Image (cartoon, rainbow, N blue to C red; front, side, top):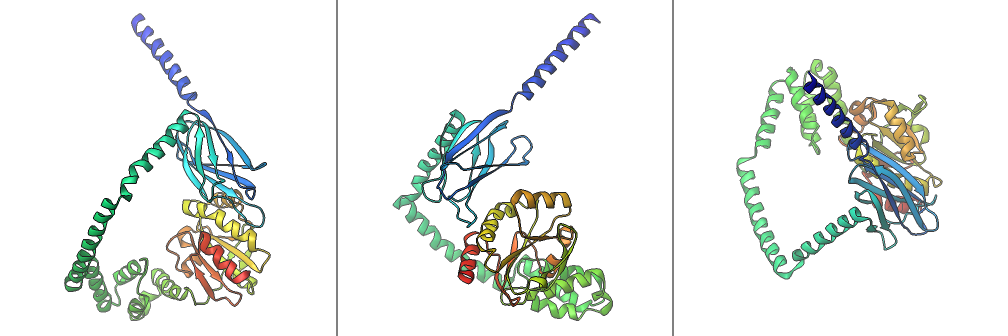
Length: 379
């Protein structure tokens, strides 16, 4: 018994030591650096080393310099956004890097690309690693390597031509399956499996709506009037929602629970922006959309953000965190969002730029493409 007691106490002591060691793993970090005078705010986003959850912070720029502080337990993938003034003037492009404990010094004054230029030992090891990669990549720029690449490209073109000929002669797994589904739907207008096959095809990235619309219209009325049949009808109708078409009107509740009708702002240029709080590419794109809004909101331009969220708290928090100061609506039905179905949304972020008459004049404009298009029509 005495021996067991000693072991137990020793175990408890070791466990306590381990707990202490775990509690002390978080270490402080700093990010400091220089930015152009047009940069007013630095926004930091990084994925926590232990949980992979997104952490956000920001700081004001003073005299062309900034500093951020925090604690991390290990190297964390991080992004810096260099936000400008109310006119939407930004400095460097967003910069993603591995944030290490200790000091991390950034230089964002040399053109549009920021760089990690100095820091404590962990940051310096990362800088050396990046330099080593660049040195190794130099072999890819030699005349010998480029000559071999050219040979491969010529062979690839020959192989592609052979492959296309083979597909044309024999078909592919996908085309054979698609042809069989097409014939099944033709021959079985009263079968609910026909609806499943139709839905699967129309959910693809670029379906041939005209080819399959006739099949849908040939289905029995009972089949077309099922919930899935009506959903397919919406998908087919959404085919008209493209550049040159007219943006469908809609009504959806805003953040205050009040109904907002799209046609109520007819007469303005409007960006209809489909996004979600859980969508990382959407959140990364939001600073670009904010920049465009700040620059053109007083020039007959508005944004309507339509969220594919299901949790109101997450939606509202993301709006506040990303400073989305425009009209925001959602029915909190996720991918079943009524407006997204009317517009045929299959991925986010997606957007439509609409002119004052309701005509769609741009689709999926992001970053510089959005800013250039708005400059073209509003300046």
